[in-house]
Image (cartoon, rainbow, N blue to C red):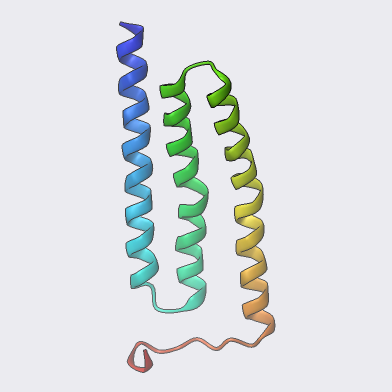
Length: 104
């Protein structure tokens, strides 16, 4: 019974993480300028790995694989927002102007 509940929870986490990836990809394509696209990508970059790797950790059980997945998750959570901030700061310092939709 507990095994089925963990399996169901892990698949729910995997599917919801996949949903965030798809929505983030669509949002990145539909947003009008660099900053809103970067916001959609950074939210996806933070939320989707949490859900997907948590689901994979539940699938792996308490093993060396789950420890490795947790280390990957910590690394992604530390570097993802830092990279997004660096990209936004660089775009701001280079005086990147907003582009209207008619000029795309």
